[in-house]
Image (cartoon, rainbow, N blue to C red; front, side):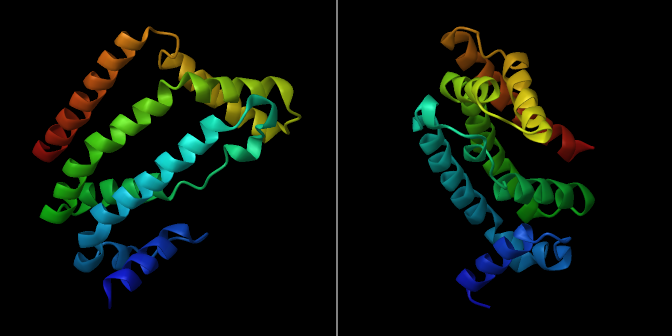
Length: 175
């Protein structure tokens, strides 16, 4: 199978409503493409994030936050297979991708622009119970992750989080 066809099939599998074909996803040929796909999905997610924080407050809606996250889904599947049936490919992919992914997640968690949009939609938009619950949890997550700390402290926490993610990988590898 050609590389692009294989990538398309991997993305299809993680987007299905039903359970993905794990045998296919965790085949050697699929795993060899995971790092490339994860980086592409991360880039897409970064672009979506930039677009979101540029939406003026008065125009933002709950739907602007909704996004089926193929990136998280694929990375969680990779972490799962690495715990169940570790291979050099899965281990190397995680070791390479985890620090850049953690860095991006920290940027989201310390984004005042994002936090302001979550709060605005919570306060100013008509939300159903489920939408309200999603955004309340998002807001609480920001507050628990020190959104109001000074930038320098946030940068230090970001560095610590990256170090912790690397240490966690080493710990998992030694279990």
